[in-house]
Length: 289
Image 1 (cartoon, rainbow, N blue to C red):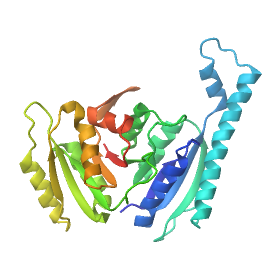
Image 2 (cartoon, helix red, strand yellow; image 1 turned 90 degrees about the vertical axis):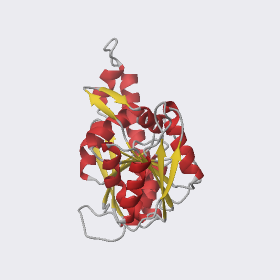
Image 3 (cartoon, one colour; image 1 turned 30 degrees about the vertical axis):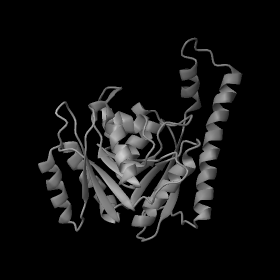
Image 4 (cartoon, one colour; image 1 turned 180 degrees about the vertical axis):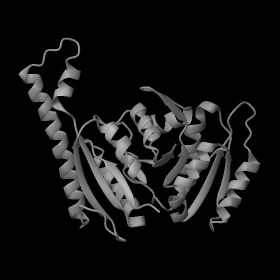
């Protein structure tokens, strides 16, 4: 069951869409939203921007402070309007409830680091892809995905979306990552009106492990879920695009998949499908590592 949702608000153009998506999840499960804004440290930001010569002018300092305040105000205003329009309660402490609530959390520090650590105490993290200025890069998203240990629900830029819990598509691969995804995504799968399993071939033989795919369909029946199974044939480089295309064709409002990759020091290496989902895909996606 999902009861706590972390929604980072950087103060960019995607904040409203991220809150809207988080609210759909909160409505479904009667969950609480923690809206997080991390203010950059002006000294650290100014030092970073003057790494080449180390000279911090008053003009630069004022610009840095001004940008930090603008982003904070945009995020806070968006959150305030969001709560007011939905008459959302804003409790300061946890409570037992069956209806959505929300809370504003403001800290100073590195945004990505705050998401990694705070996200561990939430069932899902709702954020946007890095399409907007100030948004997170695919590398940052991937790193947060791995280090938080929590599912990431990514928004779409499309103006009109299908119902999130209408049809849920599952990208299945006989792997530990996909199995872990199934556990984390099960609340979404159980809440769906219809479930579609998408199994894509990878490799030169263009074959899908039909036995493993059928075992997944059988396992879902124990939960009372009759899933439609679709086997896709595509090249390795086109798997991500094929999965999104099949999900759209099936009328899905959400695609769930396992994230592949690893993190070494500050270098992040993404698998091809995961990279496509974080960089290119424009579809509501639940990624679980």
